[in-house]
Length: 105
Image (tube, rainbow, N blue to C red; front, side, top):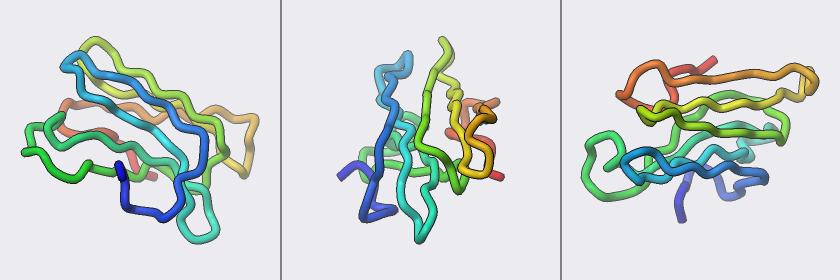
């Protein structure tokens, strides 16, 4: 199990590998009655010791369209839509190499 925040990870998801060869996954998951957007990655990616993957919540509720990109420095960019207005495109981006993501609304 990569992530234990939710008993149900809904689709879709987006998987990328950073420049240090660590995987990063952006995914939708069910949190109560909402679909939420999160990212998960191994703790070694941010200098931790091997163990359970780190999971970060980005936004709730979200529409099931997710795109993840990592730049050459390994900083993440996640593009997603929201149920309140699926035609709008939202972008969450990582500004520092400390952790992914940096934005939580």
